[in-house]
Image (tube, rainbow, N blue to C red; front, top):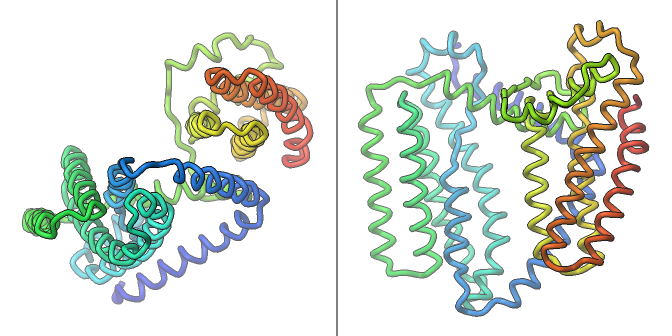
Length: 403
């Protein structure tokens, strides 16, 4: 490798091409229409909620907490590969330009997301503070500088070996970022903001000096890059096969009680396999928990009857659709094909597990609405949820997976 500029261009071009290929599958899927409908519904209720707020609502605190989280999480997209820790390690001193360009492209991408977040939160601030939207661009420029500082500081921290350093760094930067954003939106005295800015500069200067004699932790950087791409591959895998997708497994021994009662019978083989896979592999269980919590929270705060029913069905669809890859989870494992089990048992097991999962989620949504005292709406949510689940499992999934 004699030209680090060419290396970066080749890596960036390859990554962008790869992302473009998978994004075409994602954006062409009808899931996007559902998400747009969900976003539109959320925006409608968000605007109505803002109108009910008084001038005493702590908008600045909420904005500071949310923006502080995003600004603090500032990874550097380095496009590194597993083999680089062998072949590029001797050339580390000649790759400063490579990582500088990676930092710049990271700032562009994360800056775009920052603009979207500020656009969402600005109506809340404008309504509560009665200051309008005139401060949007000045705030954006300042926060982009803070984001740049976070990316640079996060990069310097990656020269350390100790895991505790990463944790302390995240806590310190989050405290600084949250305080800065709060005082910025509160329009505090300029000297307080300058004081925090000086602390940020001193913080970076300290770690810059401490890490001058240290080398890059290639294994950590590569592992983080693979983890980020793994998340994208799992999303793309909902729409097309992704050969690069790697399985991750967690033991979760405490959840064995959910599968210990599965009978030791030949026809139960795939039910046991799919159940254990759901509980241990990738993000299937985490996906269910996240969507259930988000859906339950949305149903709790929305009081429009038909809207609650549609929202519950939407979240059931999102959950079921993203669990469909479980069917092909073991398709590349030859030993599964050696099972002396009829294929119909595989189909029956998958449909049963998917139905049980979705019915449990429907029950959770119904329980949330019952807690609000809306018994009639809760019954409609339960009935429509169960009917949708039956259609999704025995009609839609059958056509989608062609089993």
